[in-house]
Length: 80
Image 1 (cartoon, one colour):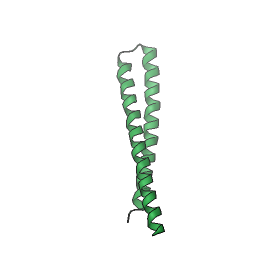
Image 2 (tube, helix red, strand yellow):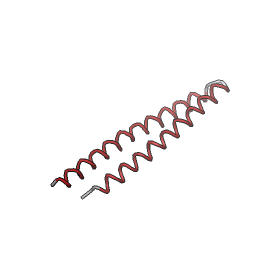
Image 3 (tube, one colour):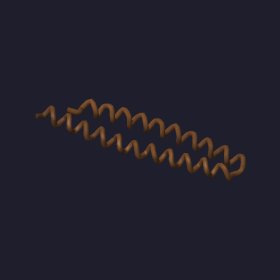
Image 4 (cartoon, helix red, strand yellow):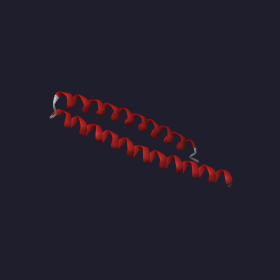
């Protein structure tokens, strides 16, 4: 009984963390896309800075996507 409760709690917790990081990852990719679109109409220096920011947001989006995947894999481990 106690073991099943822990298993259920871990599965729910990991799923919630995965959902949160999935939303964060999507937000980072959205911001990155907006920066790339703004760079199309910006001066050369501003476009370079926007592109650098876009790259950084893509890196963070990738990190959060990895965390999402790890959490989901761990949650599946606790499936019955």
